[in-house]
Length: 212
Image 1 (cartoon, helix red, strand yellow):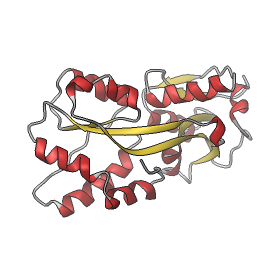
Image 2: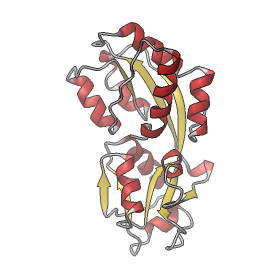
Image 3: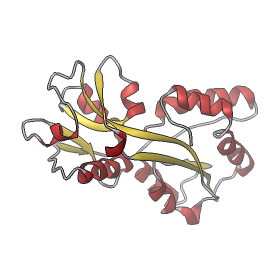
Image 4: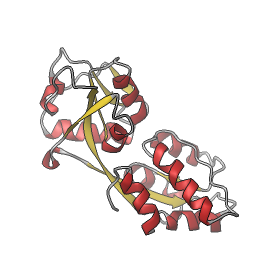
């Protein structure tokens, strides 16, 4: 889900340079996409927001390559009305915090950073993907939530991003791989390789992703 906006731009750029190829995307939480892959859902390539999810479907894919990295931030309402300062603020019972579910990559990363600081947070809800977390904060249904930095960048007029220091943060890796069930393996391989090119990497970095 965290690749929704940037992949629209990447797909358009790829199609411009490869007019014989049409790229269609299916966006969802990595765990949902992996479940589809396990059931041999017709698709050509898979990109996940962590290596653990990709490792879980390695019997169904070619060799994965990392195309980008990401990091976490705390999303708050515009202007940070609750004055969230850092991760410790999230342990305040008076603060309505939303997190992604533990099965979701960003949910696992969130648990890692909170556990590292020995913080107990009681979320008001656990969402199935990072966009669900962001939406709750945007709509004012939560005071704060942990999201990827790139997702916070997609709504600068609706949320503020409170940075998490490097020594407290988690780095998300995004592996991509061609699927063995693909009926367009040559084109899928080409797109996966293209995601590592300078052109694709510029699109990803412009959206806030970090180099692989």
